[in-house]
Image (cartoon, rainbow, N blue to C red):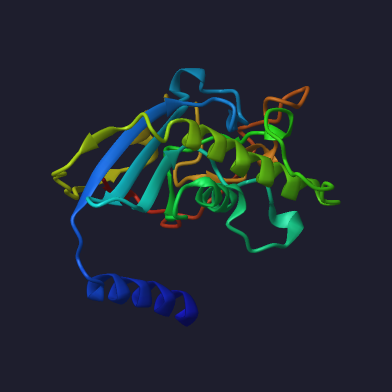
Length: 231
């Protein structure tokens, strides 16, 4: 806990002490369905394939940072692998940084992932120029990272620019209990929330599909009733 806390604090202090520079901001919104997939297949109307790219660079040239906003849960590895990992989002950061001029900081910002898992990009993008790993999840994450890098690099010169960007932060607290989410009576019988519905199985691939009503209920007070959203 202390290690994580101190590393975050050190980064904030270093940023506050760094020399301020004038920047311009470019952005582009891309549609990319190949890098994720709905593992539940229950909410087709709510899928969003938008990959937002925000590019921050000095006025005299040179990218400082690139922010990527995309819906992709880091779930290539799971509890069975016993690994502490940044998973697919971290590989996306690494591989995009490798291909961009000047190797700027790349930050993956999670969009509304919900049921959106990392796609299996092995068939779409080249996983590696060398022999594949003996551990398939690493190849899958490498392919996702390289695929995202290809997409960002192809759009690198197509951005809309603002030379005098106005940056702002807004926060709002909203309720997230069952009634506010909008479940109909009898649709979800866990008044305090639940975890591991369907035993974590992917409803799209299994036949018959898992019972999404089979959940481990949370105790009263075990889940928050509101959440702060910051944009």
